Length: 412
Image (tube, rainbow, N blue to C red; front, side, top):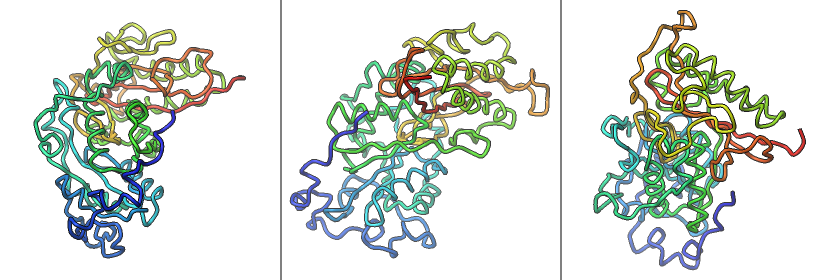
């Protein structure tokens, strides 16, 4: 999907005096927060500890940059981990040593639906500042809710449209509307040349790209490959909620995706079959939820491998943010902005990692879907070109998402 064209006139050197981000009339920038200060900037000197975050739009506007200096933004909901650090390092690589990297930390209330506990979301700003600094950020923008939404909940919001009602949107109605609304606001406030989001939150990334294209945002959207732990589990703040038995079950997600990738040369049907085979074996221990028999949990036969309608409901949220990027809702976060939550389900852990396979906590599948990355509709078995295999499931009480990009050739 094509990104928006280059920067508008407000980002040219000739218009710099009129731009509040660049004007000298607002006084010198805070030396803790400028990108041009070099080694003296504590955001680039790990030994000096974390710098104070920017808290207001006015402070953000006062953040100086040269007319030819590119700015990248990485949007998060905090609880930063190595996945976020990878995004920050990628941003630094893209803008170079003279460019500017801004990290946003904002727990967006619009992304939390009924039963999703906004107050429980982890807030670890001091640690986040250190992580951002060590990864190469120049500034951290961590506003309060009334700074982002000064009039309370906004009456005018971005609609994700039909694409936002599929898969994750079907399980969390309205979530993507809230995500896109805050991403749009943060793009306006930070005025970046490029914004980076994790591929782990593939639907979020696709929707942001679509919004930027459809609404002519002057910013380049960059997707960054999913970061995985040594055992293959996708990095997520929610992983901290997994017991040892839950984690053993959760590995079925990445193993299903890797099996699908091996089958990709044989086409979409083989990909679905390979992934289903792994997930079916992981679900076999769950009473009452045999694979293929439940429209909300379990793998469905045919091209639709999971519920995609508006009425299908899953448990908790997943990781957007970016995973993690700007959007994630329930509990610990990963992303896009991404990583939504953990403890929102009701299933009890069964067995221990050392017990019999039938006693181990199974995966409870929300969906497995092979989709077109442009609109997240299911692809047919004769599809050629790019696709994304996306999966969401609960391991114990923790809901996880994962995906893998695939490409199918015209000849197999």
